[in-house]
Image 1 (cartoon, protein in one colour):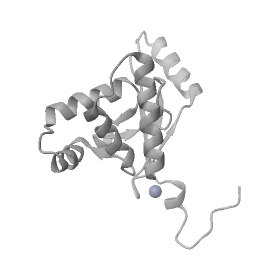
Image 2 (tube, helix red, strand yellow; image 1 turned 45 degrees about the horizontal axis):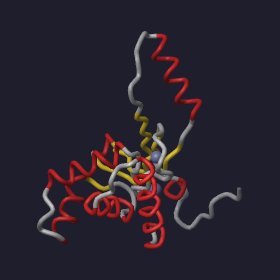
Image 3 (cartoon, helix red, strand yellow; image 1 turned 90 degrees about the vertical axis):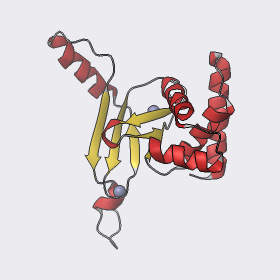
Length: 156
Ligand SMILES: [Zn+2]
Ligand SMILES: [Zn+2]
């Protein structure tokens, strides 16, 4: 992700926070910035390492608190199966996500398939189960990694 896109995403997060009356403190902003700058998933451990090597005053508990804030506000998603975090591709609204994770290159794509979400709700309700959160993670290979090296992707 380019710096300009990171800046734009940070500004957008700033505006969402102002609208909700919550504060994007400088640490929260730095945590979000680091996640935005990372291609693919970043583990909490690596995030803490990156931030604390730049600033020794940054301690793990404060980073974890910032992460929960960013999750609550919908700016990032937790990837349970990789125990890491990824920036949301359309922050600002709380939404359900289906994440497609490429195990070859680490690329992560986010989809919002409402039909699947409704199907899961329906299936769970039939079992008398009340859903509180849904995390759907698909592992596999992305379009680029599926195509053999040197072969062009099929047109359209
Ligand atoms: Zn999202
Ligand atoms: Zn890939």
